[in-house]
Image (cartoon, rainbow, N blue to C red; front, side):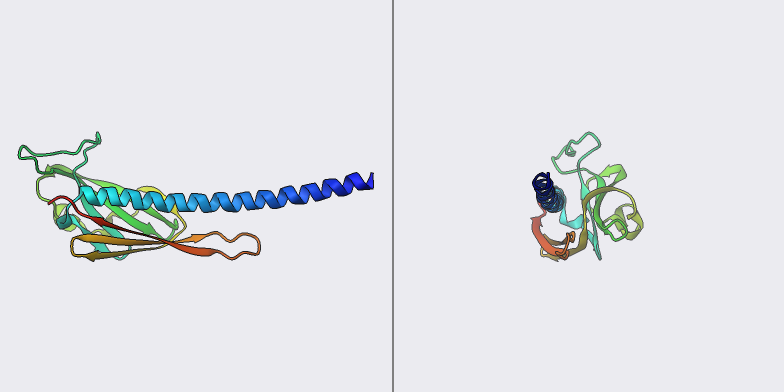
Length: 179
């Protein structure tokens, strides 16, 4: 009876240790996957946008999008993009994540201009709502080099047991393809 109890206790502790390891790996995978989604989404949106519409302020940016509500890239009769909305990316310190929101332009326009000129609002006034793309984002750093946008996400893996929280960084760079 004592031997069976000892085997059950050992089995329980082995199972518990394996479960903790699985949770840690699962949380890290979710974090990395969220950061990767941000980089992919931002890269795709920047490539579809135009440099003249870019507005950066701290850990926030906005850029024009020619994608309409049905997901179609709108063009004028000459084949130039018709800008339908502004895409806004920002880090929300309260939620600890990176948010993406879309602000429609009432009437699509042929010239891509910053949100401040296009809608007459500040970029900062448009923060607050949107879709959470990734959690546990400690910093969202932006740099404009020529007509290229460089960005860096600083993420924090959660602490587990005796292991402290560990940071990791994911970087990307995107080129604007439209005028």
